[in-house]
Length: 321
Length: 289
Image 1: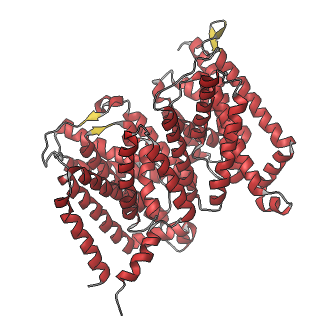
Image 2 (image 1 turned 90 degrees about the vertical axis):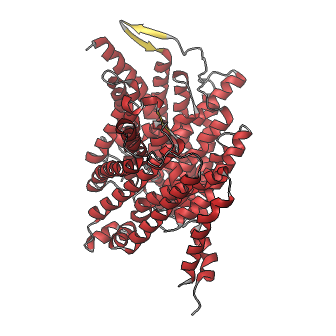
Image 3 (image 1 turned 135 degrees about the vertical axis):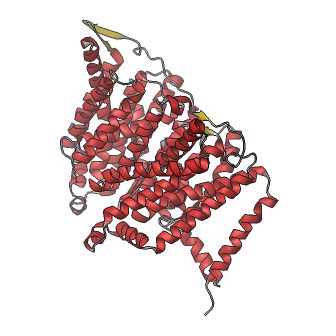
């Protein structure tokens, strides 16, 4: 076995036994680390690998959260199945968006604006649907049980979110090695050249956006059942879309471990600084610092922090030959 | 359908549209010269509104009187943003240009939250409640003043770009960056001035809007998006297009309140946006690129 794999296994082992030593508050921070790493990875599938920037991924978070919660409230369906339903709806919307965007050749900023427009339209419509709680949102008040996806204490959420993060890592690792992965990277580097070489760019763009939306909506289901409260502005809003892209960009866009590194770095920083500043009446300061950090990363390390992590870890993990 | 109400809404839409046009003109100018989409545009405008509000509360100076000060402050802010951040990312791929500007928006929005708190605020200026009647149609004085001034500023910017030396340098840098460098224009400084000018334009629009609506830190996004819609409607980088697009959007938004709840009017504008992007991406009047 290679050193690299031993390292990963050890890291995993530590994460599995870690909850034995942590209290509920710290567990909550880890839940958020895994959650944002998962969401970042889902976004990364589209933007990191194909290069088409989505600034409306909150759309899929919201669709997942609202679909599963609605099905649970109206029909008593478990969010575990609601996840799949939400994923299918999200992928359907993404395919429609992708069809408009890729078929009509909206590139760069036009594509960004298309994704924002879709998220905003959905937010406004959901705000006016009575069955979805309209402006006041929905409170989730189910009995804690595995079937209802509601638990008391952070421990179950810890393992679920850890599982989600591992799932996303595995999924992206498989995509990277597959034909799909090679094709979408080719699209990112030069879409026209890829097309000229016979890659069906439309098809692979569509596949990437559908997978990304499906994965993101699962995060939405988790998020809804973790914070117990859905509001159109917090689920579908621009701030959600911005929040979820910061970590993969800071970590390293279009890389397998970038979103994870970004989340391990930024999430504790954000959770702790938010609590700390809010106590001092300085609400919003953590986001100011956040924005400054993101600008500095783009200006001075556009390939992300992963480059420096690699430089440090690679010599240690290389097998002696 | 009530004809008077319709006419009333159309007039209000035109008045609002003039301000939309002014907001979008700043965005269009920045895009036309540097090819950068300013994702912090609405937040810059909200910043201007707060500065104006602050001057009003602290010094008792009416927003219309302090306009020059506010515009100067935001000009400097835009100049600095361009000099420190945007000039460094101008040659980046579009993907990497988005994040720093979104981050600037995030910073401005939360600075406003930090400095002024989350509450809605609306200054009670002298004119905010006055209105005049033309037959059965009512026109708010502050809306009318805002519209007239917006058109005045629009003309001013046109003259500035056509007649003055800096204006000519800006147009040269926008037409051909390399050519401008070759004839000895300090393009980076022209870029700084252009971003500052774009910011100042939207600042002026913000001040004009101040008597018309309460301000809150999180309203920036909406205006950024409104500016996008207007600019895409009129044609990216086309300054006259921004005015035309603004008028169309203003009327469309207000007339749509005849059929839809007012909170849904943005669904109409976003739908217009998507249709224009799909079928006439160069905008109604044609744009740059």
